[in-house]
Picture (cartoon, one colour):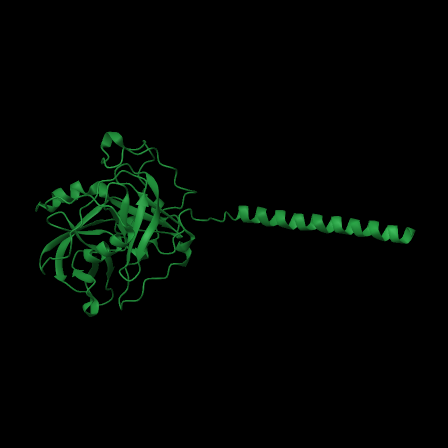
Length: 308
């Protein structure tokens, strides 16, 4: 009997010791994960599994190594009432100074592109390849220099289009109902080409429609001779009547000179219809100087920052 009691006591001690070891292992694992700062995107873990844009026989506009990855973009102050464009006096908080080109080079896990607003409630369009595999997405507001968080709500891989949502009251750029421009007609692009080299100020570039199809007569694309650099991807191609007719997507490199492509606005409408997006009632378009359009649409085009 004493031997049996001694064995039971020893077994209890061993079980207690084993339980403590297990608890220590679990605690160590939790501390390790916290130290590694594992991140779960708030909008959707599906971003980790998005496929790369299919090869169309040309090199897609290169992604940029751009701004530093701050711990997290601060939550923006309350924006103005939805549907009302921001005025200089209504900028949401003083905010930090605009990001400098030097800061845009600090982190090679961060890339950038361009996007533009399409309604008053913060819906923004960009290229899918700009945001694919993103862990976190943000936009640099050209109006006040603040960085605001955004999240993906829809995409079309085949057309290289994505729709993001920002919690901002915004002024949209109107969309053409379809691409109807002829060859030789003038167009303008707004965007942020190579911000690490050219700076984070918005650029306006100009050119013409060269072809109503893309490489290998791809009906989804138009060919333009607007100068395009890495970072222009996702930016609007605007006609002289102030309407978006395309979204910059890619370019040919190598022996080709200034051969650039944009996705026709028709394919954006298809994506927006699937998402049930609400857009403002269009007004009658009026032809105006591109200099006036560039000034009017300045606050509607954001530098998109992607943390990978």
